[in-house]
Length: 42
Image (tube, rainbow, N blue to C red; front, side, top):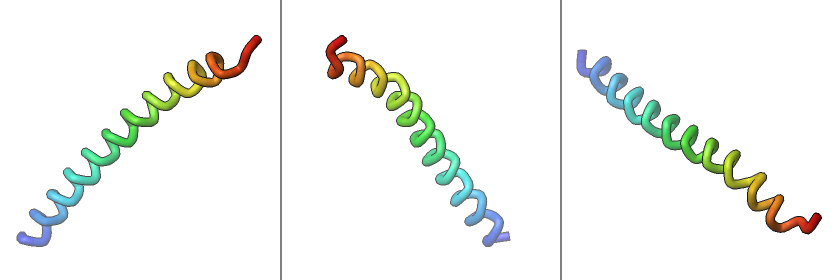
């Protein structure tokens, strides 16, 4: 039972980490093209 509880906690931490990575990926996808468009003169 203890192993399952520890596994659940690791899964929760992994889920939170994945959520953070997804958030940063979305921010990167939003900011990347804007920065490139601003940097490249048309």
